[in-house]
Image 1 (tube, rainbow, N blue to C red):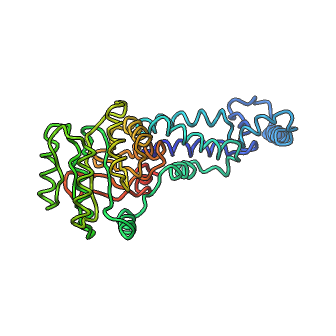
Image 2 (image 1 turned 30 degrees about the horizontal axis):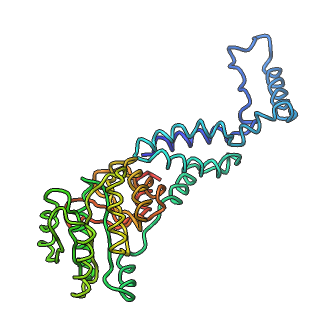
Length: 344
């Protein structure tokens, strides 16, 4: 996405790397020079003019000399305007754009233009925001040596693909020789229990469920009790989708966390929602203390901006990217791949 911009940056940098000697006004074309002057006289005058320009006291043109050699704050602001537009168009939240801008400004303003590598510095700024996740399976297995079962609570808003993603995670755990059970703690949304039951049946996993309207925290508690009794390694708790600005629903997820005491709290957001996903992640992090993030629909989003935004907003790692509808469509997050997508 940054190809065109990088070319413009390169041209701008090369132009401003010219020395005063290189930027001296070019002599007029022959047709503009008076015919009465001989070629030798013209040459002598040009050499004299060039010598005077080169040897001019710095006090007479010091500002312009420094301007040509150093990246000023004014020039940086002018340059970043174009970059800002491109970042915003690619689902990077405004807050994250400001973070990148401040990082670049700190590194570049005042530097010798000959030493400035804008593409490299932009890559460094984004790398400092993105966090590669710890090994998901190793983290669980290490914890199981101390206590069992390992409990994960999933939270997010309606329509983000949370239940399907939970089934993908369950499948991933099974592939890595960990036993799993599910908890249908979404007792609010119509057909939510039937939906997760279908996934449980396909994966041959036990599902703890109760009637609609039941306290979701009690469903989670019963699921953990079942797992302890049957020596199940991991319990995945599905919760009702909720908007981050609804106090009652956010207090409900807070209660689920308080009762079940999870080892991980995972926020499930959509890659295609940009600023919305960022605000949601921040709110859930404040309410329940996130361990990490999973972004669904990453196969639809070719921009990568949401990953930058939620990482910057929460400081939490992204564990996985959902890349399709099948159980196998769960990709371990790799920040180098995101940076590659950005053309850096």
